[in-house]
Image (cartoon, rainbow, N blue to C red; front, side):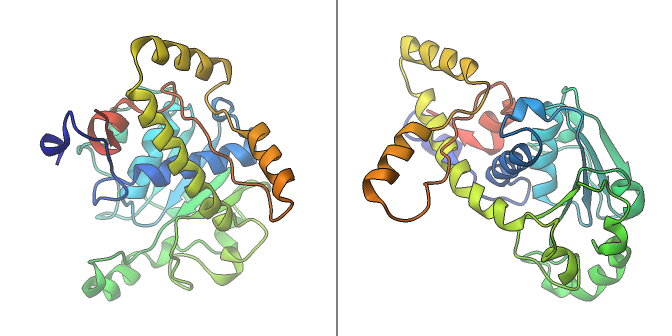
Length: 264
C-alpha cells in the first residue's frame, strides 16, 4: 500500500493487528484533559497501567506515552504480554518515560493514575474465548483492583467492552470511568491527524511558519475562537469538539514512517 500511494496520497492506519495509532492520539488527548488541562507536555511523571491482553492498542499507546515521559506498566500473563519487535515497538522508544512489564494485575495497578484495559476476545479470536477467559481471569478490572490505584485514578477502555470479562459493570459505569470521553476525543484526534497531514504537504516556508505556530501553542492548539463564534451564530447544540493540531514534538517518528501516516 505504501508503494502504491507514494507521491500520490496520504495513508492513515485506522487499525491493524500491530498498531492502533489514531486510538492512541485520542487517548492521549483524554489523559491530558484529565491531568494537565489539555497540555500533553504536562503528562510527564504520570503512571499508566494497562491490564489484560496486550493488544495493538497497548503498543501504540505505550509508544506515545513513553515519548511524553509517562511511565507505563503492562500487567499481562505469559502469552499475552508485550513482546519486542514490529513496526511500532515500545521497547525501542528513546523517551523519558519507563516501560515495565508485570506478571500480576495488582503489581501493575498499584499507585497508578490511569488504569486501561481492552477486550480479552478481539475480532478473529472467537474460537479462543474459553481459554482466554480462563487465562486472563485474574486480570479483570474490578472495584477491588481499582482500590490499589490512586484515589484520583481514572479508568479507560477503547470499547467495545465485554461486561463481566475484562471489566465489571460497577467500574465501567462508575465515577472513575472515562470511556465516553475517549469516544468524544476520537473525532478530535482524527481532525488533528488530517490537519497534521495537511501540514506535511505545505511549502517549506509555510511549514516553517506552521511549526513555529505549533511550538508557540505548546503542542495542541484549537479553533476555539472560531468555534465559539459559530456556536453563537447558530444558537443551537453544544460547542463543537476541539480540533487539535498535533505537534511533531510528541508524535513518534514511527507514527509517520510505519504505522500511522504515509504522507506524500
